[in-house]
Length: 313
Image (cartoon, rainbow, N blue to C red):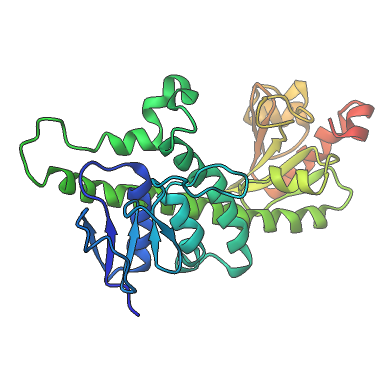
């Protein structure tokens, strides 16, 4: 039967039912979203999806509340909010609707659940304190969405509903952006894996454009790769590879003699025609052509200490 109504509770709103609504309104664009606590409306029926209200969790009946005791738990005993329940039931359909490749849906479903949904679940259930974000606690997504609620003395009888429907497209934009980013990372991962295979034993990785690459290097244990080259507009860049996301230290630095030089000075120091720039911190260099940047990369490798060449940093 066609879903004609999406039902959640009236009154103040929280991130969990707002984000649930972002998922459901995309999947069921012709259904009416109704905010109510009326008993007739929050009684399950085949044409309704009821969430964050109703006092029950029953996937077959399409009711997804978590306030009852005992509340629904994940396999690891962490609590669900309505968002987690909706994502578990409808997340894969949502990803397919966003044109996520079928081969990537399961991985992205899990990553989004872990990185985005679970924190919402834990905060909503009081299983995680907002203070874990420290000074940035007021800038977390639940806090920012909560700031869109009406002020306490707003006299309008529709203030909560008006604020909810103002916040809904904002919440939806965050969900969609996260999915697009995860999907892009999956595309990048596959591209980098192919590039690593093409590089073989070379310490130089060539990518067709700038993209996330660290996960693929880790997956393939490619410690031998020390530098990466990519086109950038009409130019080419040569980059060092950080030891981890927690440090600026690199597997290998570009030659000290190049640091801070540009144009003619860098061409003289490197001996490479077309060399244009090297950052003073020696993590990036730029050249006019692929041939020039490859030569700089080869010189960068040649200038390293033997143990760096052997161990990859």
